[in-house]
Length: 162
Image 1 (cartoon, rainbow, N blue to C red):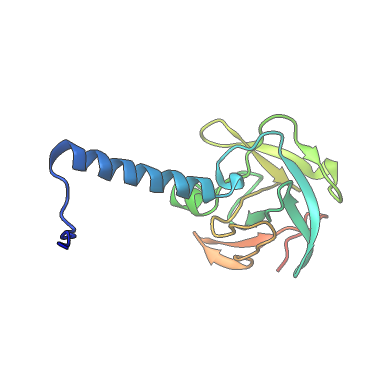
Image 2 (image 1 turned 45 degrees about the horizontal axis):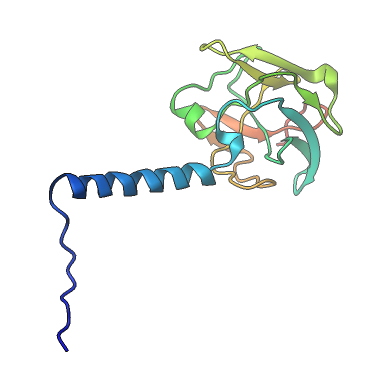
């Protein structure tokens, strides 16, 4: 019985190119599907809530992702743009913000970013995610110095966890 040869050669021309592009598209879509919805930019009807963590009770979004403040932000305005905003995605306001358990409604606000979109603030501090926090409840970058300031999680009263 004759055996067929197995090769790793690529298909020539348009067929090979289509397969390569299709494979690349499938991988890209899979990676997007795995990224948390919290990192996708604007969330619909965002919710602020308070949950227990290894740092005590701190702010989270309605999906369980922790929210950070940046010490370089001043007067309620964000100083995080470009590469900073890629590593620290903004917590955008879209629709009516819901105040969840433990949140002081009087401390909720918003600031307008350069692109005109509204970023949620708490106690006058713009709020962000960390791109590396890929699961609900993760807190990977508390008290980290990056992009010229320190990233800290926020207590229900608005104070930063140091």
